[in-house]
Image 1: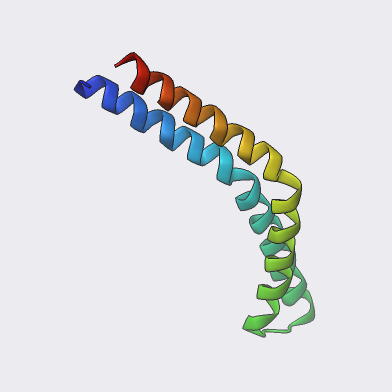
Image 2: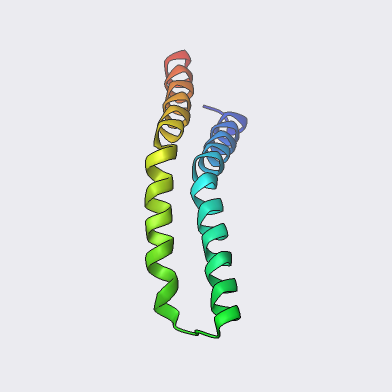
Length: 87
């Protein structure tokens, strides 16, 4: 495996990581902003209020998005296996 091949595999891996993790990160961002807005409007400044809704939202999003994530990871593994087989 040459240097450009290693860079291609690394670039593909980073791209796959971004695609797989982005739905959960977007959900966490939206829920965090909503909770922050709620806290600012009600002047409730309790730090622990944000954790439970975020955890629940990410868990529900993970259940919904898990097939997509698994499919993308499977495609990535197939590309890596094809590179390994081809030499």
